[in-house]
Image 1 (cartoon, helix red, strand yellow):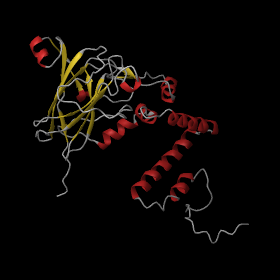
Image 2 (cartoon, one colour):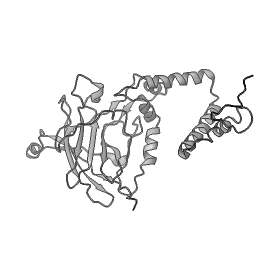
Image 3 (cartoon, one colour):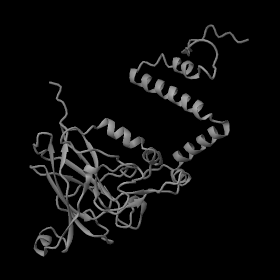
Image 4 (cartoon, helix red, strand yellow):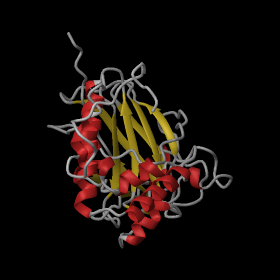
Length: 307
């Protein structure tokens, strides 16, 4: 027998006695007692307790456990520099939306948040106010989006950064069409003016399916769920002294607003994209007439100064 009395490595405390199914979570959770980071210990302890309760609740078999491991492995293998299958998995299970909603409560006048999604892995190019996102010009209804960034008290947030990205009229992001459209097409990073105002040209976004050629697609198929997202633009607003807001601008009257596959729709974020038929105004914005116009005022939270 090997003498381990001189081992100097860390020990693994247990709740007493050998591992048993009845006390499994208690025993494993006790092994985390040496975790010095209080928040990490709380998260891991809760994870262990819920995971063990889940296994017992469904009576998970060894074959089912192995299938789950294969699914998670394949999910990781599907990730690359421009695709995040784990975020997509979190999205379609509603976890992303739950975390976002709990972490960014929208009290009062604050604009509600929603999921970032799996396609914000590419930096948006800086663009001047009024520029077009659509360098490819491959179709879609021309559109003007305007807005103003203010805080809870209505004070404009001068120089706010407004990061925008969206799918094209065919329902694809630039990273899904490499070589077919310019890199970072339909993405733009704008700097609001002194009054917090921003405006840009684009095309009206369309609804689209999330990628279904991976394990998440198989999961949706197995559960009889459609893969579609409601038509939207992604908008992320940041500035010194304010809490970064990640949100969407949804297109009123389009499909899937009541069944968005990632549960991302909030009623307050749905806007009318009004038809404007005024050649003179259209010319001022560099747009054909008629065009569509959506106004999206954004209210962000001031961060505490700590004074």
